[in-house]
Image 1 (cartoon, rainbow, N blue to C red):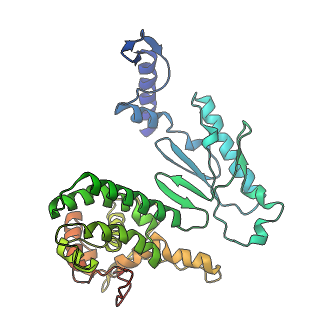
Image 2: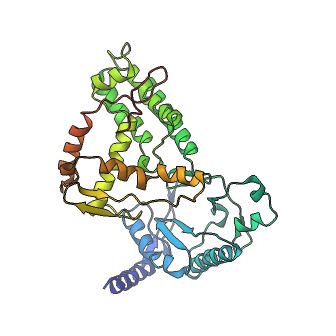
Image 3: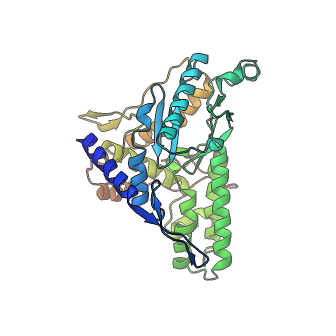
Length: 366
């Protein structure tokens, strides 16, 4: 049924494009109408839909690696255990490029990027003559794709060292710049105005995709928290209060607490089929303990850096947070009800995020 639908849709697209004329207006001068035989109308809702249909079979052309696409952003992922695996991934890359040529869609090969996640971080290993052959790829046109330390993927900076330092630094810097602009452009320091501006223009930048890169190091947590700490100090009636006191007065959660709430809600959505379970979280039902997310064990023979990263991943941390909720809360089936009850539970715990010069009784993690 799906194949029939796509076939009819592609046939309609072809007829639509073959019978479409377009004109261009530049500085008030309008060109004559010309037949348009390829491409999609830009600036319309229809354009992205046509493009997604157009590239629908792109990933079905690869044979070995895993492929993912979001709009016009496509990536190939493969485990490299030797030169043979490099050749296989290179073959899939060539296949994607060949598909694009056969379908009259040119790829910008100079924008191709590759990031490698080595399990063995030994400097000696990286300096061996053959090491570069395991991380370097090329296009049929001769463009060499060398590994990057950090790449930007759908607005998130990912690094080959499996750390989120770059993402957190850039997030904090972007939020600080926006906060400075807001404070210079608006002179009203009343609570309602300031909180509205902060939530819509500053905090939104601090929380984009945050369950993915949720920091665990105190310094990184403080860097993000300092943006909110500095902004709230400028709100009327809050200058003389400590940060923890300001959070209570303004009825705000710390950014750390909000990130953990996002993680918990996402696990609940996976459980109730409201979000894709693309990380393979499994759940088990217990008569006494209720529904719990399974925490998969890691191989104890793994090197320490891998084990530490494993403990910090969303799959592990979010599952642990979900499991410590009361059993009756985990069993709620409606999203709005779950969020309300989750908020009531979180209110029972002091929200005292790490701040330089202040000592907490715990790490503020729920």
